[in-house]
Image 1: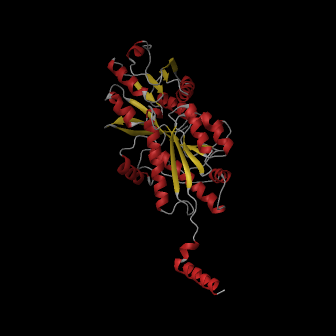
Image 2: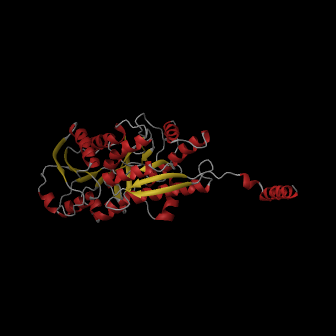
Length: 384
């Protein structure tokens, strides 16, 4: 009996000396998946997205995490490939600690993975995939921070006709779901007030367009390209052949490295370019200049969708925090519900993020840029 009493006293003393920390429960970490091309020719978009998301997570963790839980990022390369994207989505679904995903980059991959995320109830926010089908499939788990191609394409077409007086457009796409969809929307919009003299396609990965350009019709006053990396090479070869017509492009060309630098001065030759951007110039929205300074100090210059990726992560974490405040162990359904009801002021757009029933961002707007001094210079905002 004496031994039992002594053991009990020693246990009480040990608990007392441990202090209140012994009674604290450390919340289980929350995981966020990051899905995008970290290799291939689309890696510029995917790597910048990953870096912006990780910066947002680091800041959140430094201020206490999400309802006391630290946030862990799990970035996986989808290689801008549909099958690889499906495998990534499946792996995220199978990890119960993952409560949301930021991605994918390419519209084709985002469309192909939508049902997988819906079936496992996992919220996914794409900062940049813009084909309308991404949010037209009716999945409650799918969200998009940027604008849609059925707004971008017709809006740019009207701008070129009404503001710049263009009447005859040559339309080129890169044969991807993003490129074809945007080109279709631009073509419909331009045909309402002008003439589309021809519609062509190129292949992703092509390098030399000199012979292709020689087959173009002669009677056009603007080229519209719907695609990504091939735009700079087409423009460079176009200028090399003495063609001075205006070159316009969707936000797939909104990339300093892959467009401005790759064009090697061609972007300011002839009539120049008009390139869409999916967000205003950094510094216009409160907080965006500070974000840009932090990002640049850590990773180097911003090329395109860093602000949208940063906001996508912050919106997702805000929804997870709201769900965790309501329930210690929220389900994925709780996160989706919190996300759908959220109003969040970010730094990518002047108005707060709010979602339509389909999961599109009501705050998303469209901007037109020229190239000046090796950078994009915003010259106009156009309504959709």
